[in-house]
Image (cartoon, rainbow, N blue to C red; front, side):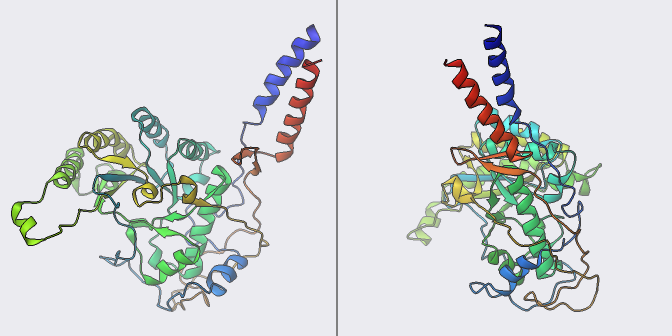
Length: 382
């Protein structure tokens, strides 16, 4: 009987072991490295051998455009009553609290993630990212270093995208297909690189400017009241019905597009305002949802893919130079730094019986655990 009790305890303890996650990000590009070098295989596949996307041979910009052309990109929801709230630049120290609030009000949003933020710490940021994904929020790519992408070569941008997507996949098990360029900085050349990887580019049509809170005191003396007033204006103007004169001028007046707003989960004041701004949106009758859902991509599994990185750890050499840059992936110059050699997976990814991804340090431990549990159950049934 004592032996039976021991088996019950042992089985209970052992089945809980496989939930522990150990992350090793030491062989990823350094935190905040601009334009981390991509693998040679990535360059060949996405820049040189891609037959579906033609990358313009335009030079790298010296400064970002003041007013980029966003017409080819996703900037609004399909339905006027839909509102996609997005948070950029995390995961940060305040993201976990934000997730708790979103859960309490039953809302799903989109997080555009910076790869370097995931790499920080000893796995805490990665755990927050996993928490967001498991809660049903959409996860998107927001580059590795948060550098304006039109200042990068094709190869540097490819590294920014794929290293970020890889670290996300190593944490949550899937590779996002939605991308947001930092600051909305984009042109036809960089857009083509993004498309060559198979990603959709998401911008916004309402900017909270809460990034002003990234410093103390806030930039341009921006106040919390100013941000709240912005949301009040947006919610009231979107509900306004067309006047009789407007109806006469348009026989079939078009519905205004739904809102995609941008906020940030990296700064304390920004996250502090998440609750009251969300309350304004919900009280105004808008339906809050992730970007994918608001543009008709309703199946969450279509927001992701699987990135099979089977190429050897041979890296494209990015040199530091201020010389002209050839677009199209032939030559890469313009301020990059050569990446570290070697890249092991941060975690072993094992597919469980239901098709989801378990993140564990060493897949063999999980297999042994399950065998042990099976043996325990068999003995208990004797």
